[in-house]
Image 1 (cartoon, rainbow, N blue to C red):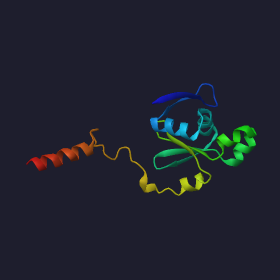
Image 2 (cartoon, helix red, strand yellow):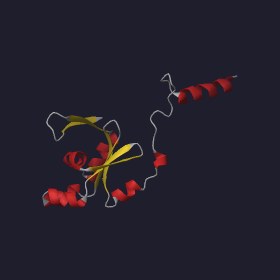
Image 3 (cartoon, rainbow, N blue to C red):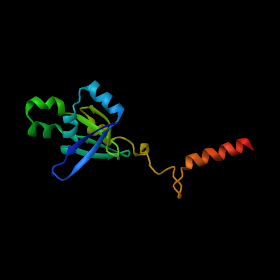
Image 4 (cartoon, one colour):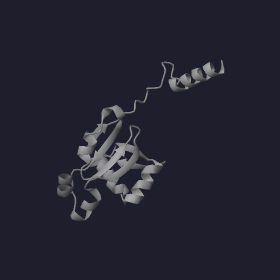
Length: 136
């Protein structure tokens, strides 16, 4: 994974951002710059959905706060970020807010869904039990 440091609004606060291999590939294909991603994360709005964070800049905010040369890079930009500050992908969608809000909650990934109380994975335990029954 690639990483870069973003300076937050306050000089003492920095956040480590990781780029997944998928996000690097998609940003290159879609001509989304690191600067545009940084602007969406630092100054954009957030929606928490399905265990991830969607960062986006509203059209009115971009028009009123950025010069016209930068509008094309920022308008309708959506950055999808996981809980561990890994950027999953970035894309442009004029109806992004509506599409994100309509996403069903049932697709959310529960991180601890397969962990037992002792920290072992219940999925592995389940597979081991099934294999033991087959072998018996």
